[in-house]
Length: 476
Image 1 (cartoon, rainbow, N blue to C red):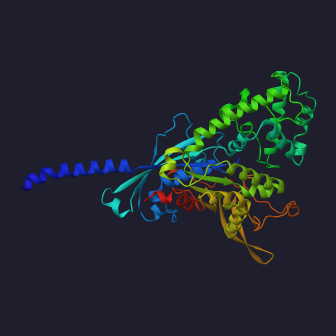
Image 2 (cartoon, rainbow, N blue to C red):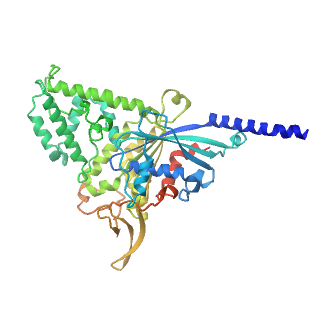
Image 3 (cartoon, helix red, strand yellow):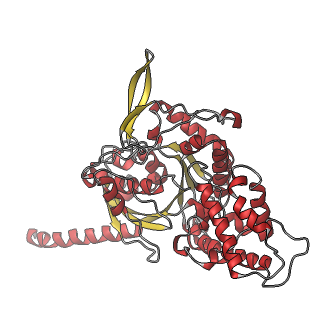
């Protein structure tokens, strides 16, 4: 009898294992996490750090607030083939090569959409599921795309005439007023009612594109730039589809000739909306579950009030374009909706630790309207100051007999190690008059030495809190 049982036990054990694997596959879930932010907000570094923290979670000592790590329920993370083969892969390997170099350098920023998939194996804490299976798997698809592309979504509701009027109104204020001089001067010599030549169309669009690139320069720091693909073209670089621009004046009598400058520009604008903007919206936006929006608030401080106001307007415009709302079985059948949204102020290591609450408070003030709209729609939101990779250390220094808080790191401008008092983040929005030269001078830093970083924890600030907010509720 015992021999019969002993012979059957391996079969029962194998059957049990197969049943568990089948149940695991049945219970496996996935989440599509969208990561976006305007230029220089740190998307590439954030995604690289997020992947690294998860891939090395089993021996990671820097994730105390990520519950499945802190509780010991994590069983490992592996990269998986991405589901969308037509989308470029996010090159985590190249990012880590750059961070591990001697000297280390920041990875090249992404200029288009990219994707990666991770499978996270974990022990369930659900009392019922514990009797059925020992582990579950969550598949996380991370989609990286430029925030500049989101600035195009409002165009879907704007006619060519309405969009032109908005751009001209914006160009009446500095610094756009003087930055757009060459383009506006050229356009004043164009008779929009007459037939257009290829050279005129090309020069008009090129001068307008040059104007947008000038707006992006560090000394101006403007971010509300449309169309977004003009400065972040991705795979459309050099395409005739990007050769159009707004008009300075809308004629009282709209020219009907199809070959007129006016009608040609309008036709290209409508084509751009249909074949670029609407296509991007349909292919990607209806698939997102969770969203994080990154913002480099400190850059706006350094540049001035116009940069800050422009960033706030751009983020508000971007967030109005999302289709938010609680996920449900019914909604899942027809349209996927974002149910969690995290706003993150990046480069939190560029200020002293006691300034982190101020940085979060300031971002909250910037996003009052957008945050309220999302919460009204039933979306769970949060605001967090974080550093994807911490490249400074806090220290105390003596100045005029007083101890002050400083940060120490490798200056991006000089390559030398510096210790400085970075200044205080205001807790209220300064008026334009308060934005005097030299009030805000937040330094930029190079990454720290991360020798053999594929085997060590990446230093960070609050990445564990970001992970817990974005994914924590999925590990049941």
